[in-house]
Length: 363
Image 1 (cartoon, helix red, strand yellow):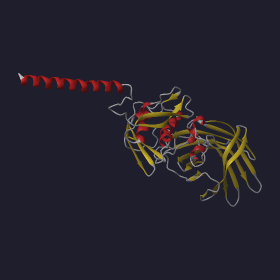
Image 2: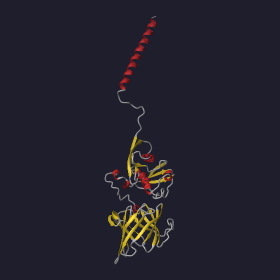
Image 3: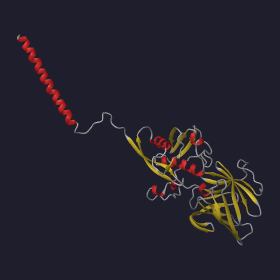
Image 4: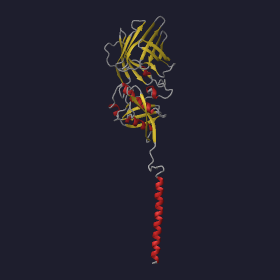
């Protein structure tokens, strides 16, 4: 009987203690509900960067801030987000959505960006669309301090002209002048001499035409037309009223060179792949005053880079002036970025002959 009383007392005390502890626990839980909520699975770290997409006119690149979970390299995240396309209204995708980023490797400041074939086969085409595709990638990745240039690869291979216009065997540098003025960094006016290339002054797209009015001799007036263009080469036909000539130009990142010339060619055929019979460098980097180069007949020198030229086709500022000279004569040529040759002046002891741009059409 005494043993049963003791057992009953132990059970009773156990229940009291259990209820007391449980009551404290319930009370503590209720208090915690009014405090901060602690997520048992902390949120993943985020990374923020700017992507460049095309505007609706395909004239400029506009920035869009993107915040994504951090994972892998920042460069790969950037490109994969570019492929997804823009989220903001008014922006246009620059990479076909079916495209896949196969790999991205950075060596000596060059990002080798390896895409699947869809970036080429599913591309919408056009020179403006091509520009937006190239530089949306290049300007986006160029924000990273470790990337100075971008080399495009398709299925692990370089190709000469992936989309038909730009020469893509060499890497590209960022081009800030393509960024919308409202999106540029303070002081970034888009006319960085370090990033402008000689080819920018020779817009040799198929179907483009120029007409020049001349003074000083019968054949100073002439017309020029781009008949064929493929990869980094273009073929022009020039008619001065007395003869029709053919020239083939090769555009590389550091120079514009005439590699084929035929003085009389009245029924011009496609000579882009013809045997090169000349090596005449018309414009050469760096595009700075004092840059000089020679061939077997002339010395060429960039003498000014911010010249204004008035022509019947309009006033052109920031033209490059090239002096071409030998022991007997001097010739000056003026080139405008995105337009081409706007004026030519020939001077000798007894003669002065000029050709000046009257009208033009860049395709």
